[in-house]
Amino acid sequence: MTEMIDVKNITVDYESMVRPDKVHTSLYSDPEIFEEELDKIFNNTWVWVGHESEVPETGSYKTAMIGRHSVIVSRDRKKNIHVLLNRCRHRAATVCEGKRGKTKSFMCPYHGWGYSLDGALRAIPKPEEYEGVFDKSELPLISLRFETYQGLIFATFNDDIQPLEAFLGGAKKWIDLFVKQSGGFPLKVLGDHRFRFPGNWKIQLENTTDAYHFPIVHKSFVSSVDEQTADIFDFLDGEGHVEDLGNGHSVMVMIPELVDLDKNLDDPIPERFQALAEELAAEGHSDAEVRRMVRAVGGSGFNLNLFPNVACSMAFFRVLAPVSVNETEIHHVALGGEGAPAAFNQMRLRLHEHFQGPMGFGTPDDAEAWERVQKGSQAGTGEWILLNRGQNHLTTSPDGNVSGAVCSETGMRAAYQQWKKMMTA
Amino acid sequence: MTDLSLLNQVTAFISIEADMLDFEEYNAWLDLWSDTGVYVVPIDPKETDFANTLNYAYDKAEMRRLRVNRLLSGEAVSTQTTDKTVRGLSRFRILEDSDSHVTVRCAMYLSECRHGNLKSYPADVTYKLMKTDNDFRIEEKVIRLQNSDAYLSSIGYIL
Image 1: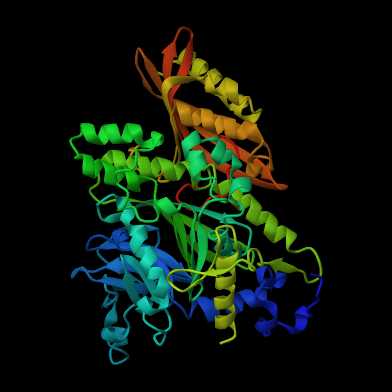
Image 2 (image 1 turned 90 degrees about the vertical axis):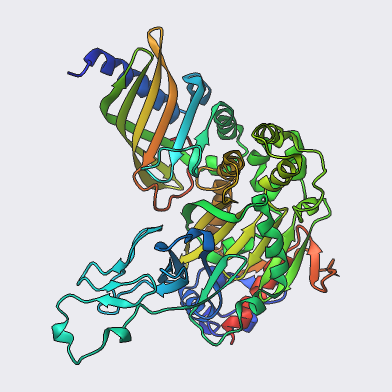
């Protein structure tokens, strides 16, 4: 445990810093490593930037971050989606502020250059001084390569990497399962909670595949739910597992009976959703519709961790944006059904508020633990972060993947191996 | 013409509520509410349809009770690391006054100290108060944080 690494000489020696069972503590705190991560990871892979429901109509836009790059996701007049660098081609000012909304165009506030929804440069005040200098068609907003899967939009700065679906690989099956939770309606983003914590982004990346902390950190949440729900969340001794899906992705199944929300629709309706079922039935929805919505309303029984910046986490998207080596912004994106009954979406919103966000009954305790990890990791002269839980009890999943107990650190090991692969490329 | 007597009454009531929260008299705070009261911390300060949008908090009676239990239980590590909050309320203005209710808006300046770091949360707060015999019960309290639409940090207490 006290094996020393000469940190001064290992900034390029990522092989020795990421072992099969542990990672060097400087991965949380070395600013040089952080700068290299932005370049080698965030500039070189598929990064989640949004969901199609966030840009539903012509003129809809949202902003997102890819590492330090501000980008705009927009929908043009032909209903096509674009991912554009949020930077005027003239003197670099951002052309779009705010989280999301609707607009007819993007206007630079500095000299009034105007861009259409697809990024084309349309208007330049007093253009005569550019006569013979350039043509407007040469200077659209810089457009990024993007691809979508099941409505999830991923963009990349690297035009040469593999297609998104190849990158997602074994994770696609789990995305297909995750999007079943809108109760028979198209999945729709309902809003998001945004907060920051003073810690490295990988602490958050680890957390989504860390079941071990749940009964400790989230004791107060478990105390706030009914006995039946508390039993469901008592999953450490259950039949769940963590599976390495390749390319740094992993899935942690906590509640196996809630993996496929289209199955077991005849199961008894849980006590906490009884009132919702009665309300939906009173509104005239059929028994089959009510059962489908009630089964879906609490979300899926697993966390799908997609390297490097998003998780399909039970009932929401958990998105991370590295701010600095010791600061990370998190978005907890609430989901519901487009056109679903108000009672269904209201229940999803209330469940999200109960656990997530800076005033939820869960997130603040996670953030406290992460802050303490960052602080504690400064102690010592070159210690290690352990990732060896469950490594001697591995099995092979039906899909042929490495699999460990639900509270194993299999998913973290998968993420760090991908980290090493990209940092040493 | 402002009804100074009513303004004094609501100011006194709201000041006591603030004092209870700063001094963690949470169970007494629960008694200030009407049974149908709603406590809301919206994300979008312009939002008015709280039930159908995502909020930081949207607490009816049961959730308020659970929130208080969480704060007092000692089970939540994030609630143990915030030292006392200090809040001041001012700029009281009566927006509506009927036989049954009075609606008041004011400014709140709240500071917290977590891990030795002082942080402030200014907010516009609107109270809808139900009139009772010589007193009030809270029907709705909406806290619109000045930075609600950006990003926050953990809030391990009641705003």
